[in-house]
Image 1 (tube, rainbow, N blue to C red):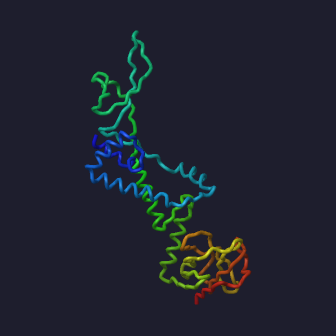
Image 2 (cartoon, one colour; image 1 turned 90 degrees about the vertical axis):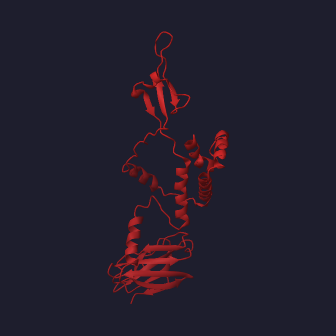
Image 3 (spheres, rainbow, N blue to C red; image 1 turned 90 degrees about the horizontal axis):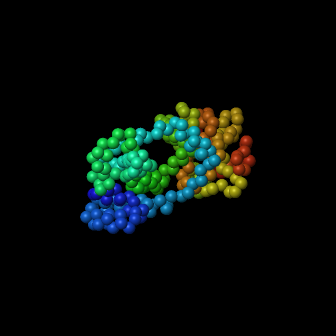
Amino acid sequence: MSADVHSLVGAYAVDAIDEQERAAFELHLAECPECTEEVASLRAAASSLSLVSEVTPPASMRTAVLAGIRTVRPLPPLEQTGEARTVATLTPGGPTGAPVGPRPLVLDAGGADALPAAQAAAPASNVIPMRRRRPVAEWLVGAAAAVALIAGGIAWSPWDHGQSTQVSASERVLEASDAQRVVQTVDGAKVTIVRSPSLGKAVIIADNMPAAPTGKDFQVWFNQPNKGMVSAGVMPHGTAPTVSVMLDGDASTALAAGITLEPAGGSKSPTTAPLALFAFS
């Protein structure tokens, strides 16, 4: 009975138990410091869920999830314990000895519904194990972890297949032994371009960059020898305070980089004067 009362801690924290269970658990709670501490922790986690911002997934998410299902191995069945419940299907004879419809009986080890010894010895084929209900606490712990990640400034998008590769490539540039950093101010924002000639790549990092006007985009350019300004990509839209983007093109030969304000989607060549220039030499 004590183990059953302990298992109600998650459901109690989110008010998901009936009055009888509540009364029993609150009696137990008055004598169990461990459960008292866990209830407080789970309630704090549950209240933090209201701070999570709703994100609308792209249309490709459904396709990606369905495709991913084929690569996920199902979890094995839960192991039976001494307290696990079983359902026995009984077919007692009627007045004429003919069997009547099967009647399911829920059994608790040592409970009042236990079968007599003769019936308990029935063939194992009539006994079907019941899975124990996963405690609400497990779900709350997972939710609390998600809240902690979001609060810490880490965003994970399950539909973004290239995210881990992109992060690794950016980190290699930022940590390269020949990494060169050039900092400029754009509309009051601190913008840094880090270039690694040996890797031939560059990363732009914008802190508190304001959103481009409606119908416009900030576009980054490389000044290449004998080619002039070549597009290195368009800055993404978003509300994150810090944006880090791997720039397109060969940065090893670039003499400088620049940022201009262009029509939405970018231009083939700059149409406005640079807002900032980043000289690499």
